[in-house]
Image (tube, rainbow, N blue to C red; front, side, top):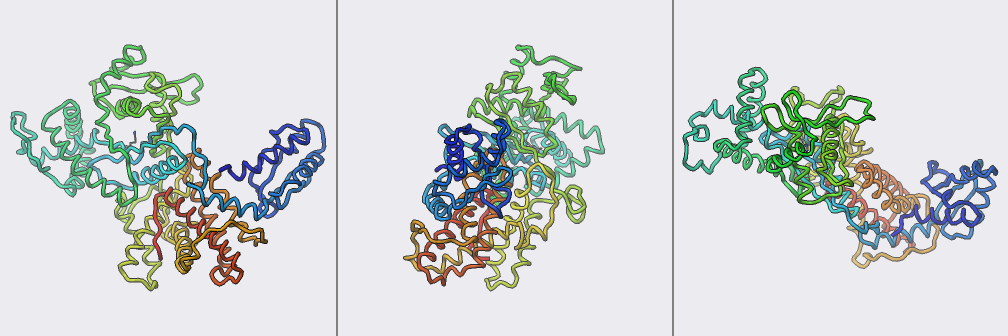
Length: 586
Ligand code: ARG
């Protein structure tokens, strides 16, 4: 289906042409004065400048030409030369009705879907998930769903950090604690045990301990570095330990992401890219891109137009060890080989933006990607505490994800204590609503911005919050639940008069396709949030001013029911895109 704004634009462009002006002047935008009109066109002003005519005269000619169009309830020229338009309510109702009958509300699907790899989550195995990885998972999951809904072929990859110093640290600490294990006996030739010599709980204690200890003891850190190096170069015992670490922590990670409603298509790891490194490095050397600088192998990535210093991209350290960079470049090689994507999108904290700039430039310069492969970095801001500093627990530690979810669910639970529902259901709903509160709070801000974590505000049932959106959906569900079976029919709308509230609701519904297209183009879940907040507001004001179920005019009643059903369907689609769920009551 064509977007509402495009239908209007076409009419206005045609009217400009009919009056002998360039069509291009007929561009239409959503009105910035919704109290006056729904849409506006400022083209008469631009045309007047070019043609040395009075803008209002041009606007009047164009509105006269548009007056034959039945789709407008209002179309007027306003000084100095605006064209203000409001769509006829019955036209709008018909548009929304048709939208509601189509798959995906009639949004246009691309002729040739693009293949997009999205690299998000990025947890490091053996380290517990904390809020630092939370935003990547929440925003990435939503961006993935939005792009997929818009008709792209999207592959979401967790890109596990499984190959870095953290593994070396764990191995080193394990060796200190249990030197008798066969993994540390170089003369051992038997089969290593099937069972891991540790649990997830152990790992959660070992890693922070080893990490802290290494910061105080350089020789320990050196040992951990060496262990990492040995692992990466095929040390048998360490490799077997690494396998155990992977099994134990992957299991834990999968459970955690499931709780968050985050579903990866791929659980690829940094180590999966290792086989691609030797050829990639050789090629970079052969083609003269990589050279030795202070012992390390580097590729220059600075460009003449740079206003700040962009350091060279390091490919190998002086001891030949690979780095985070090397892995990321080799992962690009792997992804090109496996999926030949049109675009790769990375989601990390925006502090990695210079790093990705180097990687992207290096990948382009050394032709790891096709000329037209888009490489996109979506950097997000920090979640801060009320003091404006990165969020910490009450005792000053880094907040664990599970703890965070628990706290927010408890807060929602507090808001629900007077409910006439079984205790168990309240607990369960609080959990669901809590997750929505957290995700909505995160997604409703522009990703690149920092935001303040405010438990009470996020969990409130009023205002621009997840619970408010869910509450609106529950309200519609409860109206629909009271209908008789035979009322379950959608009918084409009549020509009757409609109230302002009803029109606002229809208009907002009619803007869904436009909103979705923008959210996908700008990788912007906050547009979806903004939209459902608006839709909830217009619905709630319609709801407060009308008695839907007891309305005596049968036509009205049926049409209203159709409209609120569409409202629920659109809200449901949008929360799916944001990756949270609504209960049936709350
Ligand atoms: N594991 C990394 C971290 O914790 C994030 C990975 C992001 N993705 C990537 N391809 N580098 O910071």
